Image 1: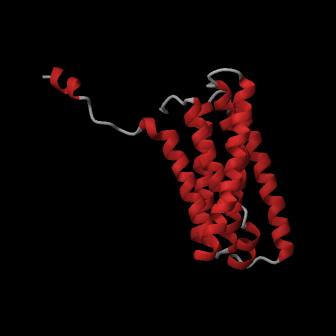
Image 2: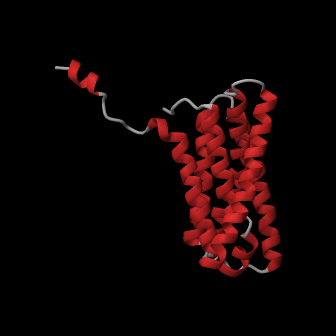
Image 3: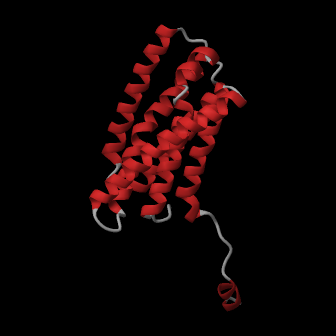
Length: 194
């Protein structure tokens, strides 16, 4: 059972996940060529595969979003994290690269869609402001992710941009699940039980 989302939780999680995604995705062409060993023609085909995965992810999520809004958001963010961390860990193997690239692609569109749905639902006022906040936060995440990847790249390697992005996306999951972490009973509850 998930904790109730709030507007700020959805906005924070969306920003973190966008930042994470674009920390790695900005450098995906270099990653696919240098780390995974794909030719430029194969990279073009992989972008088509990525796009089809994104379309499939949006289609599946759209069918389930009204019934499972919180679960859809957490699932999309967690799938993105698995895809990015999988690319970091197994990106030297072409077959696993394709598999994790599909997971990342299948999550990228749904993350934005489910975050927007949550922000509209929990908007403290006008929904047009909520839409603008979601778009602004997502675009800020894109810019921050590209900048962070640019800082990581000269210090490590292109694989590390996916590690950094995956860890930020895990942070987004933590934000979403934060209210569900087990907590000790309050003192007053312990003292009344005998």
